[in-house]
Length: 113
Image (cartoon, rainbow, N blue to C red):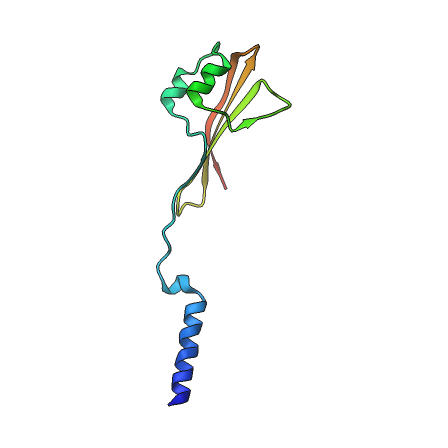
């Protein structure tokens, strides 16, 4: 009788400590968003000739301000949807000259692996 109880305890402990995901349902997973979530309305309002302050008010502070390229701002947004293997990435680069927006580049979603 004691060996049956000990054997059951060992089997139960083994099941609890190994491969719990195969026995129990998956834990709740959430979507992970990082960066500047840019709205299409705001992107449509973006125009050449705007000042840095106007762009900051419209789009927010850029994710990347390169110290070597002070006239270039990069807005990056990533979205990792729970259960999806791919990460969606949106990149927007704006260029300034003498505090005026001169170029808008690379508005696109790029799937990452």
